[in-house]
Image (cartoon, rainbow, N blue to C red; front, side, top):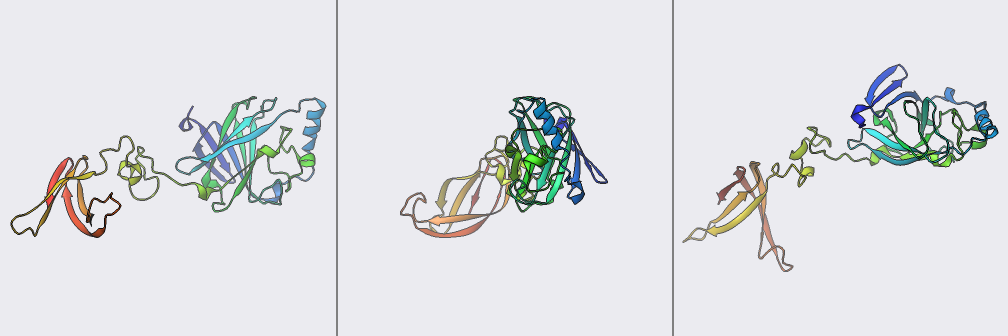
Length: 286
């Protein structure tokens, strides 16, 4: 099932946002000191897990990346333990510093309603809209299976789990990313100016050579040149365009004293040439 078929309901404080993702509903809580739990009451879950001999559970983060348009942060949560994650909700905290080693302030925490268990040896993609991440120019640290109740730096012995799912190892729950590292590339067949340069799809130079865009950019070549006799004062260029796209504008023409690919060639200068040429056409330019 692709992203377009999956609904992620993003519930913010006083805001309801609909977003197409992988069968998750998300409750977004902004940073607030009131959400921290300092009672350690949740550590009873770990004691219960030990008593019932069900330890061996472990989740980890894999493949942190962005969507092609840099609008969605995507990462995979994998289960390499021996216990399936069957809780109704899944939690992710985002911090401005490494919460494992340093004091860190909460940026946002997410509560996902999940509709498919995280079975052993399976991975599930998590989607977070970049528009909900307030820090865009610095490193952001994420931590899965964390409801943001625990003070930082984390004390795994006393403060974890802070959800209903106890893990053997929490260190591989940490991941990091920087929104500014994501570079938007033009998608050549979606009818959108993805990179914001005013050019759409095959009209963008980024799509030059991409399959399906061969005839959307001009392709000039010169079959021959000749001079007018007897004065030899005028040089005519026979310029052809072997693409289907017409062109009307100015092009630079550079002159050399020999074939430009030769190492001994000397550059003589450049002049601008006004050119109006149709697709699959040739013109003579004096």
